[in-house]
Length: 637
Image (tube, rainbow, N blue to C red; front, side, top):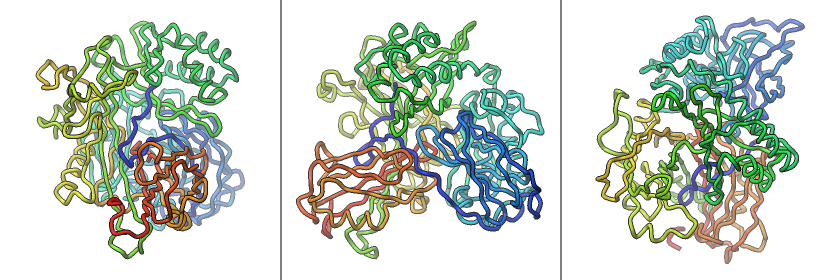
């Protein structure tokens, strides 16, 4: 099973965690429709919370225009019902928080009256456009500038126009309302539309924006409160029946992993008949899996990881290719396995729909292992006064192009790669690559037996996959260049073309793939207000005074609705080898106790606490806290 790649120095490798839902207060909410008087005796709210798959372990919180709040759990199928609004005054702000694609995150909606209240990426986008701000910040702030119903309607109309013919192809009529039209998570109707699109929100030079891309079909739409550009085209993609995907992940893998023992898991998965004859997968680069041993291998892996009895969570379509080979439609599905506090996150499996057959597991979507990711990091010194220039935050952003060279057996070994962004009209590709990677003879000779050779960015160390988008020390020109790359991803779509070559000089006929970037970092100006994982004051003070006499280090941070903690790391001197002590964050917690391996020599030694998580757009986020006894230059020691 594919796992997100390891991050660069001080971008720590991820493992997922839930953070407890925030209890936020919403003050007076003007507008939004509805009555200004309390709702009558039997008024209730029901709806669906989904992102293309049900949000797992979710809670729905509803706040009225006076700030009163009620909450209820959301079922495994993404639905809730019977939430009493007795005595509450509309309009109502909705927050749904739960487990989505490996992370705890929250989405938002607004409704005027009792009845139906859905929360999806499309309702979240509507609120973002109507408020001109991050919906999480709006919900937390008290909602003094709550949008009117006409503002919500106007922004939803813009989203409808951007979606083009996807709405009709999904069987949704012109009267469908994202927030108030009932639907179920059966991969039809509204749920099918959510499968077909990727919705992102963010800050672009101080303006809130929404981006909608086609995962099934094509196109990219960029919207902000003032206008929009681009649209999506369904093509024949939404004519495809997606319901068989649930048979794979719910009835097959989900029911199998939920078994209490390995034998039952294997029997259930074998009986489900979910493996395509061409299924192939490498688990941890050591176990080669085919259709014949797929059930036993996957269940054995789950047993070793302590995941039996757990849940296959959030099987979300990450991307689909229905055009390269119309007879064999391929999608990549991201998912997580959760069992109590244990989790296996960031996994991917390809599925295939062959003519005359149902959806089946394909394993790998190609013979080449390629993953494109993104990260943002902030580093702060905590051993000097806040007004000391050395205490100023330092920011870094990067893209990762993780490309395995292959084994030269199932496909030719690649020795070079070039990565391109979309052209401005979205019909072709820019002439100059954003990244160039090679695998030289010298680097190939350094690959250890059993390891997979990986291409490295030209000019970097062997296997290095990260391309900087400009950081605090690079100067204005570098950060501006990074911002330009980010702006292109916002407005032209987040897909890249990757040309692979079998020679280092890259003169051979390229093998071409198109991949979607897993998240895009913020622009440089937005980093200062980004919701980083903020270590609390006692934790910062403890880092300064920690002298190695204690066997562990306890860290606590402030929860937020955008980034949740996945793991925590304590480093001495550097983060190499035994100097790095790491622990997963327990699901539902915003604290961690890190057992210390190598201890600092004294309180003045160079120490780093790093809190790692991911945002709802799958950007890896690292908050680093550094102490070195007040020395002029921590990194010089």
